[in-house]
Every structure is written in structure tokens, then in C-alpha cells.
Length: 504
Image (cartoon, rainbow, N blue to C red):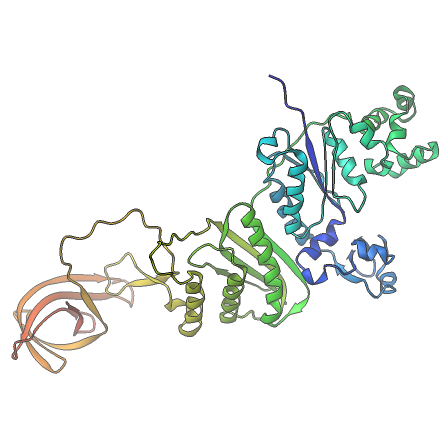
């Protein structure tokens, strides 16, 4: 059985610092931008986009020099945003190949994927590259993709591509000829080595490859052999794959402190757009989103929103987060925002052919959020009994849609229901030998015909919240013949009787 021919794809994102900042700022796309790094007064331009470069912006310019070009927007470099963008890119590329090796430097994102044997899954290398470019473009990043049979060759090809090109695919056996016209800087030479080759008149990889190997080694050492192998596309490489962690996380540092929540909605929309795209690429949806706000003065505030069903509806998430932040407003101006999402399976609704159309399930989440704003967050949700025998001991938890595990068989008996009285109503009880024989309820006297009990319950005797009750189920009749079935409770701590429920 023949071994498959090796194929590598290099994903190269030039000017990565400025691309990472502009990804979550759609209003800046199409405008000249430059990124400053360092602390004043030693700041320098470290990255700029094509439009800024066309206006004369260069790496190393000072803020004073940058101010002479008024159309250029100056941005501060953000390492957390670059890390967030880098993780999103690795996650996206990992959807095409599980074998990735990253060689990102200070100013460019570089990742090589081993795509050997992926033809049956993604088609020919050119088809895979076009699909990859489209996926990454949805993340707001412009990349170049080079495909060839040598690891180092694809990196050189990606670095040496023209700005107008996005893809180059080198057929098997033509790697050396494809590398020949590229300039020497694609090898990442140190300044001293680059100056040596410049004095020799060596300017392209083809000229370097044409040098005799032994004289080259005699003059520059064993590194000369490696450089010549790189120039010919024959340099060996031990592939060291990484395992990128899948985490739906987006971060942005605001250009200036934000105090109005309405102004924060534009930023929320950009971050949620990226999260939904990344989740959809894996056939997932957002089940919960946690917003972490960094506030002036060093404070932080985190809020988690969890709808009833996972969804990728960006507008719905914006509404839910906005209403939640209105209920819990930040105590200071907002400096940065991080959104961390929990993935979930997309929800599907099967409609019957003759069944009436159901209302949109997402409207329930908006309705519940509005009710929470009116009555309080602790008063909306699903009641859950606590692990206690104390009467009315329950708590509220967020509403969730439970998956039904098969259809339950229909009951073959008639169940008795208890209508709980809230609040319980006080009654006057007549006792005989410690057992209730009659009581006054709603201005009427009832004679007890049958009584079941008492059932005793007590707890929390060690604290001020101690409780002790006696429960009686009674059947009583009024003198006009009307019958009543109810649950009487005697509170032994407060020394009073109450009617807590009526049986139907």
C-alpha cells in the first residue's frame, strides 16, 4: 500500500495586531488604522492596514509623526484581543484538520495544517482552501493560504504572496520553481545574514538555490545547508501538532470608558456575532452567555443569561443581555467587555401537518425577562422543593425545557387535587381529647365527620427559625348540608390553627 503524498496548508494573517482590533469594530472597516504599542512617550506604530500604508504610514512611526496624517485612526495594541482572535482562528482551522502547528510571531499569525488525506472529506486542496478562506472571512480576518508538499515551503509561499492574492496551490514536484522568484526576506533571516547575501548579489530564493552547496557551507557554516534546503523546498521538518482548546470566548477593550448601556449594545452585537458564527461552524448553538465587565476603579461585574433553549439568534441575545444589565446596572464606567458562551445543541421543533402553528419559543425568554424586571429575579422561574418536610419550603430556579423521555402512560384512576390557600386562612378549632371535632371557617361552623391524623413535623430546633406543625385531613359538614374537605394545620410554635388547602 503506497503512502499518501504529503500536503500542507499554511494560513498567514499579515498585520495581525490591527486585524485583531478591527475584527470587533465593524465601524472601522474600510478606514485607515494604525496600532501603537509601548508606553508614552516611547510609543511606536507596530501594525497598520493597507489603507493606512497607502497614506504613508510605516512601522516605527511615533504618535507625533502619525498625527501629521489626520485621516489615520490610532489604536492601542491589545494583547487579550489578539489572544482571543488567535484562539478563534485555531478553532476555525482545526475544523479542517486535527494536525496543526502554530508559528505565530509578533506581527503575523502563522499556522500550518497537515491536510494529507483530506480529499475525501473536503475535496481537492483548492476547494478546501476556498472554504477555509470563507470561514475565516466570516470571523473578520483576511488571510493568505498556500498549499504545497513541504512544511517550510508553504510558509515561504504564504509570506511572499502579493497583497492582491489569497491562494496559491503548488502541484507536486514544482515546489522549487514556485519558490525561485520569492525574495530572501521570506526566510526570516537575521540582519547580518541578510546583509551578507545582499553583498553577494543574492536577492531571491532561486539565486540562493543555484549556489553550490559545499562552497556555501564553507563560507557561512552548516546554516548554509539549511538555507539552501529551504530555498529548494526540500528542508525536512518534524511536525509538532498542537491541541487548540475549544472555548467560545470573545474580549474587547473599549477605546474610552462607556457609561450608557445603549452605547454598549453596538459592542455586544459585534461580540455576539462572532460567537454565533463560531458556534454555527460546529453545528452548535449558544446555551448560555456570561458577560464580564471591567469597571473603572478596578471593579468587575459578571452576569449570566441562560434562555430556555439554545439559540444563535443574535438579536435575541442582545435583548436578553440588555434587559439583564438594566436590572443590574454596573456601578461605574465600563472599560472592557468579555463574553464567554456555553455551547449547546440547536433546538428543533417538529410541527404537525394539521396542527396549529406554535408561537416562537424565543418569545418566552423575552417575556420572562420583562416579568423579572417587574417582580424581581427571585420570583420568576420553576418552583423546586427543598430537601425538607417543612411546609411550603421551596425555591425558584431558572426555567428550563426538559426533554421528555417517551410518552407517559395515562393514569387509570381519578386523582384528588389539593388547592393550596395562599396565604393560609386562620380558623378556630374545637378540640375533644386533643382531637378536632369542629371548626369555624369563613364565618361558618363545620362539624368534623372524619379526621385523619395528626402527622407531626418539626425541624430547625437549633435556630430561631424552628418549626413544629400537626397536619389533619378532615371531612366536615355545615348545618345546611354542604360538605368540605380540607387540610388543617396546627402551628405548635405560634399556637394557632390554619386551613392551608381544600381538596377537590
